[in-house]
Length: 112
Length: 114
Image 1 (cartoon, chains in turn blue, brown):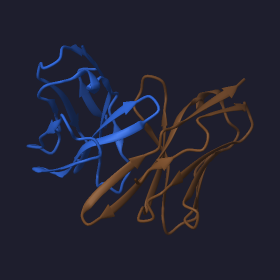
Image 2: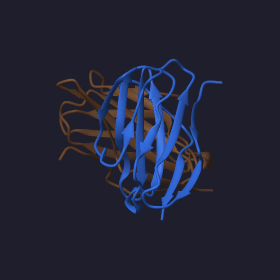
Image 3: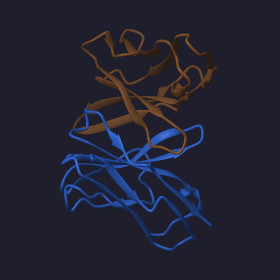
C-alpha cells in the first residue's frame, strides 16, 4: 500500500530534550516536506527536500533540522525543543513540488 | 507577505445541497493549485487540482474554478453528503528563483446538516 508513515504519532517531552520524528514513504517520491499545523494558522511549511541531499527552508524553519540521506526517509529533528514547538506535525511527499502531496497521519507533539 | 487565505472559516450546508468554499491567494506567480480535505485525526487528502492555464476543472462531485484576474479559487461540491464534513484547505505552488514554495490557506470547516 502506498503510504507516508510518521513515527511516533504522539510524543510528550520536556524542554531541551532532543527528539526526532521519522518519516518514510514507499512511493519513490523525490519531493518531501514537513509542515506544522496550529489552530487558526493552517499548515506552515518547515523544511522541504527536492531530492536526496537537497533540502531547503520553508516558512518556519527556526528550531528544526532535517536530513535526506535516502530517498524514502526525511526525519525532522528538534535539537532543543521549546514549548512553542508544541504542535501537530505532518510529513508529506510527492513526485515533484508541483504535484499532489501525500500526507502522513500526523505527529502530535507536546513540549512541557 | 504572500499568503493564501479563505473568506469563510465555517460553512454549514444541508445534505444534498451544493457547497462552495472560497479561497483568495496573493502570489501572482503561483501556477498550481490544490484543494485538500482533512478529516478529524487524519492528514490532508487530495481532492482536486488545477493548473494556471485552466479556468475550471471538474471531478466526480468536486469542481475547482480559478480566476487569475482577481486571484481567487473556489471549490464546489455537488450534492453534499455527511461524509464531506471536514476542514478544506486550498494550497498554491510557486517557483521563484529556484525556491519552490507551497502555501496553504488557514482552512474552512464544512458542516453538513443531515
